[in-house]
Image (tube, rainbow, N blue to C red; front, side, top):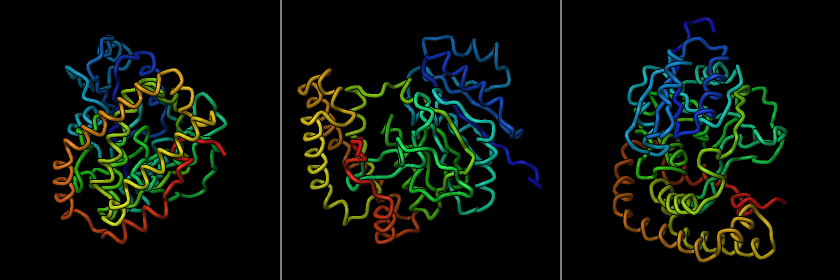
Length: 342
């Protein structure tokens, strides 16, 4: 770049998994981008994260939290002390290619309307296929990695997407100041979808950077499936819709959700989809209990979410019709949302 490189604050939130963090940090030190500071947020680990970071990565800034604040709270604590023009987030179970930061910054600097930049995230366990290239959304608010399981694209120029994945992305500080940080009520899962939609509603663009490759060893920290994850995802996706969807879509959320449940149930009976094995191992009663708890807790905070929706109205530049068109354009079919391979 001709001008001085803007400072980027890279934030890595970790909970135990010391070796995963070590490998992630090593990949950050291979970046061909010099104007970078790194913050590690320790979400109450039992492992000696601070000792390892101090000994092996002395330039890294450490934030030690007394308990687990989740993905949302952990990243917020890092963003609050960030000094960069941009904030880059990367999971501790991800490895960044050397051009990751420079490609995202170049993309953001080329268009000041870009509020967030997504990465091309490769499945570390299947390096020939994508984990995600941006994020899409279902009409009931359930989001999922776009193009997951497909070959990685070779992009020549930035590609517009609906949302970014919090696994690896670049956020413009100016955009965050205009819409706020992650909603910590979400704790984990869907909080990046919520923030992305808020950024979109404020009029910012979200694009994928052409050379921002990351390898992601999917859910090494949180687990691919668990009852806790089922609870978070089911509760949180409703909050995403309540906070961000235009009213015309909100009215039909119960119908879209019932249809998704029908497709999920049918795919399990047919032995299809990613949830089939999990259902057999965990038991339908336990899963039903997690769903029930998610619904109860979702309704308990419904007034608070509606209040947050009203508070956002003064910060948005896209009206209900424009948001409807945007969501419709990038909507994902139900079979893709629930992971049924065609």
